[in-house]
Amino acid sequence: MGNDLVKQQLTITMDNMDVASKKLRSFLNEATLSNLISEGNDTSEEDYQLILDQFRRLLVFFDEGLESGNLLLRSENFRKSAAEKTLFWIFHQCVEEFFQPHYDIWFEDSRAAYTGKNAIRFRSDVPVKIKDIVKAMEGPLQEVREELDYYETDYRTKVKQRESK
Image (tube, rainbow, N blue to C red; front, side, top):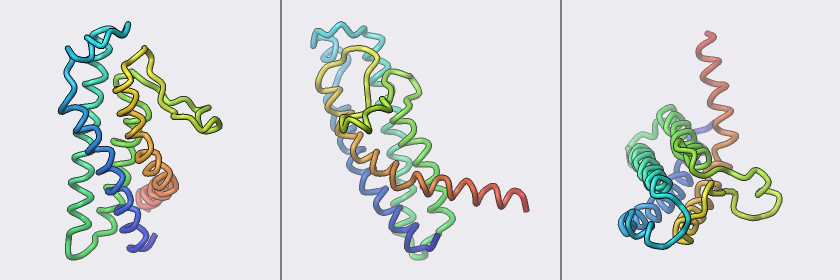
């Protein structure tokens, strides 16, 4: 892929990651375990802890991806190989971590693509504000996923070709 295409993908990715990151950071700055528990759902304290832990984990990955991507975009000479590596990392550590979380507290409903509904489903009943923040992040991260899906396959092919030489 040409430098312009990779730079364009990186820019789109940074814009969407920035949106998701800001929404998540705002939520985490306001949310407390005791507030979530007091909302009266049947969700256990352990589930709330896992949700907040997963959100914090995602925010760390988002921040790392944003820092790397924005540094590349600001540099005088655009380094295509570094940008490709960063996009690959973002695809796996941010996007895939969102859709397939480490703590397994939500999951992606594959049928959602056919129904036009949000794809994320929680394993237990959670407050609306948790559902809302996940919905708010899902859109931008789905766009990144779609943008980088082809790119991710192309990057893997390039890496395998380099290894076989």
